Image (cartoon, rainbow, N blue to C red):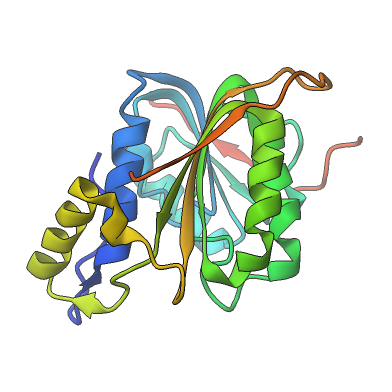
Length: 234
């Protein structure tokens, strides 16, 4: 899977390159998924790279959803905010990257609402991978607790260092260094970020023992904002 990290003229961010490399590695641990739900999918750049029977891209921008469907005609596109996601939408792999707490445009008061939606969209025994930025720092502890209650295993990758734009060669070299020495990626005083990899979703409505959290380096359906499209080849 190629990280959807465009090489902009002014350079790229090593921390973002690092994050996508870790996501690529984690997604690749499963040979093929049944249904992928990609929240805040943008142009659905991840769709061609994830082996799955079905890919559902969800984004608040109708223009981005339409563009994603043009590029990925077999995908399902839903225009919706994460907070308003239809509870019928679920998958065995749920993704949400570069959205929660990443920039000032995100409503940080909705952090936990969004996290709950991600958890609810994950099927039993499924996987959830998402990152959270420093604007949602006050919610880090509660996020981890909610994941612990919902999943049997949770890994937390602390990162955020090297956010300045650099040449692609330098940024990728730094990303490789952070993958090899994960402590280099941590930035607890500046703009800390977290990448969460949660696996083995528990049965809903059970109150079993809390899952292990490990820090590693590396009602009625809600109304959709626009129509749901499902195109198939042929």
